[in-house]
Amino acid sequence: MVRLGMVIDLKRCASCHTCTAACKAEHHTPPGVFWAKVIRVESGKYPTVIRQGLPLLCMNCAEPECEKVCPTGATEKRPDGIVTVDSSKCVGCRYCSVACPYGARCFAEDWKDYFTGDRRPSSAFAAHSRKMWLEESDRGVVSKCNFCADRIAEGQNPACVDACPCEARVFGDLEDPESEVSQLIKKRRGRQLHPEYDTDASVYYLPAR
Amino acid sequence: MQFEDFKPGPRAQMEWGFGGRRRWRDGALLMALFLGGIGAGQFVISTWLIESVTSALIGLLIVGVGKTVAHLIYLGQPARFYRLFLKPSTSWISRGLVFMVVFVAFGAAYLAPEIGFEWVPWTMGSSLSDALWFVALLGAGLVMIYDGFVLASCKSITSWNTALMPPLFFTYALAGGVAMTYLTMTATGGEILDENTMLSLDAVLLTTMFALIVIYVASMAASTATAKESVRRLTSTRLAIAFVGLAIVAGLMVPLALTYLHEASTEGAVASALLAASAVLELAGDLSVRHSILRAGLHAPALPEGV
Image 1 (cartoon, rainbow over the protein chains, first blue to last red):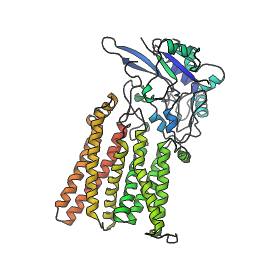
Image 2: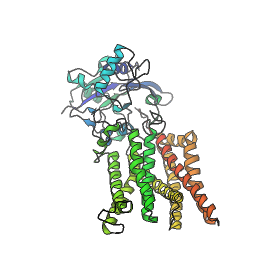
Image 3: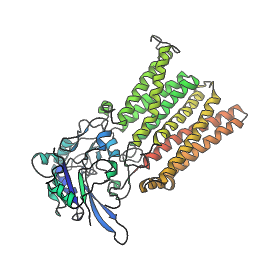
Image 4: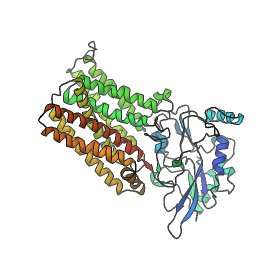
């Protein structure tokens, strides 16, 4: 059984936000919606404190809290491990957003133009972007990263993986012990965020030092 | 863009309650929780302690109409509301709505003979009516407690993920029911047959609520860094006005004092005014404590120490 997952090397991440931009370009997410983002965190104790970027996205957990709490069945887990949101079933109650420990879910009441903040597109590209967004998601519902399921279906990597200039992201099958992701996790002690919640996240982080 | 989404430390939940992503509209969810609690509580008190059909009907309407409308205002896609009932096996929102439907349906059936539907095949006091009342009471109790479970099920919000949430919400709902019943009876000129029992119950509930709040704050203050930050927000930021000022002082201490003052008061009008003031303050405290708990809900930082 395939279980798709990602490994992010914190040592390589330069916090350049290219992943954020690539995700936005791929999915036409409106302002305020970040399926992929990078936050700046400090860790360690004096004198070994480091400041690092922490790329965040949906962890596509094996035991997703969002799926358990969703009252409508809009959130589902695919056999390959990707957690999806069916926007035609979502009612926008945002229980999933509250229950997700990783802040991966985004709610957009409506599409808005990046430059005017208006609901009417200000350019031909904005109109195209609006059309693409409404095809992928909807107004008043929750959306999130799905590891670029459409690209995966075409045999490609997720957009953030291909766009990362530092090659900090690797995508592959977590169940295959020979895959690059499995090897990296094993050799460099990859860790999941918040294992204490028993979500069994499919995104692993390689330590910054 | 919300600043909270990019914060490295504890991150405030921005989905439920006034001041969320949609500012005022997200407050509709808080109102739904509040109305559900006090409406169900009013039905229980009105049918159990004082047998007032008018008050019970108002309680039923608060839940059936008030809570429903508040939920619909909150939802991003209200036209699909029926989908909310689909997963009671794992989702507390689904379970809560099922409880709400059971409560409203059986409560309405129980009151039906007294509110103009004499053609129904049961009368108040019959075995069937008692059975309907029992199921309605069960539904009301579950409506009063389920929102505590909704919050407690969120693992990453330490200040919610505590076993204290359901009893706290249940007690507040019951006390809100006592307050609403008293105000309804006063406004409609109805006589409260067993006023002393109701007042004693109110005093017990206020004391219990105070004890639960103290235990809640003390246990959070001794918990994780995120829970401590929630307590700091509750007690020493602008939120303290709602939590300490309105919920604890105005909503608990003053009503408790007024309840005892009422017993010392010899003039009937003064005593009634004191009790009415106490009831209004209790309701304000109920709304305020729910608002404070929602707003103090913080997710643990994305990167735990040591990674």
